[in-house]
Image 1 (cartoon, helix red, strand yellow):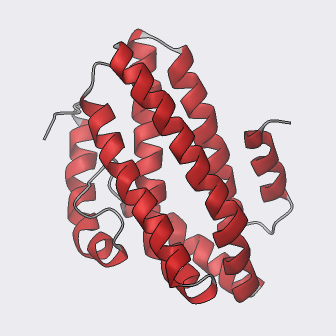
Image 2: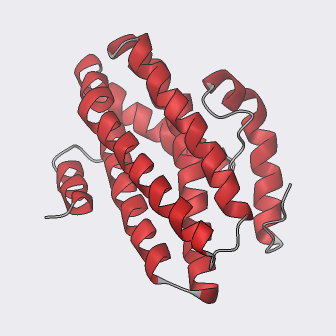
Length: 194
C-alpha cells in the first residue's frame, strides 16, 4: 500500500466531516497530483500542475487559518511554528515553480525536491500535529473545524503568496483579497507572473 492509499484508509476510519479526515484525503490527492505532473507533458502537464498548485495553495492557507491555532494549543507552539515555517518555504518554492518552463530540466529537479519536502511536511503533520489536534478536541469540535476548513478553502487564494505564508493572522487579513485576484486570474486563463 502506497502512502496515498494509507492516508485514504486512515481518513475512512474517521467520522465524516472530521477536519483530520479531510486533510488526510487532501494529502493523498496532493501525492497523486505530483505523480500526474511528473508523468504528463505539454498542456496536460500544465493542467495537472495548475490543479496541484491550486490545491496546495488553498490547503496550506486553510491549515494555517484553522489547524495551526488549535495545534499551537494542543501540540505546542514549537510544533505549530515548525509547520508554519515549512509552509512558508513551500509557498516560496511553489511561486518559483509557477514561473518556470514546465518542460525544463530545472523544473523537473525543483519539482522532485519540492515533492520530497511536501511529503516530509505531510508526514510531520500526520505524526505530530494531527494526533495532538484530535486528542485535544472532541468529535463535534473536529467536525466544526472541518466545516470551517472547507469554508476557508473556498475563500483561499489559488496561487502562492509568499508574503502571507506561515502567518495565520496575515492569511486572515490578506487572504480574501488575494483569493479574489487569483480566482479572477484563473477565470481568465492566466497564470500571469507577478
